Image (cartoon, rainbow, N blue to C red; front, side):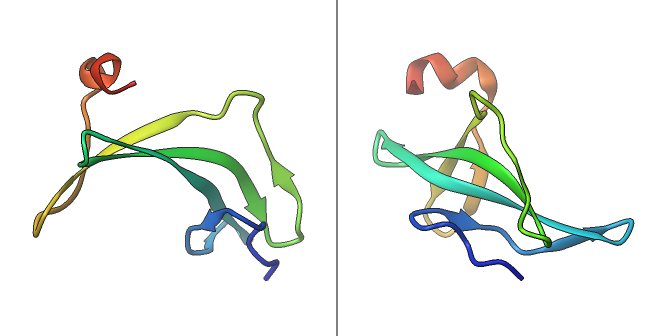
Length: 81
């Protein structure tokens, strides 16, 4: 499997219809000391090819101690951004 690009984090590889791929992302920032921004940078394929977008989506996760991660509802994004 190809290496994760420098400075990025890769999720585990998944296989769909015989094609292995994974999401490559970067931590965007911390908000209010709890929410974590994650910016998806690409979909990486087993052969090394990347699908990228010009403005990757941003997903905010709310980190609650001992409760794991939960997605922050979109209506709260303006407060976090």
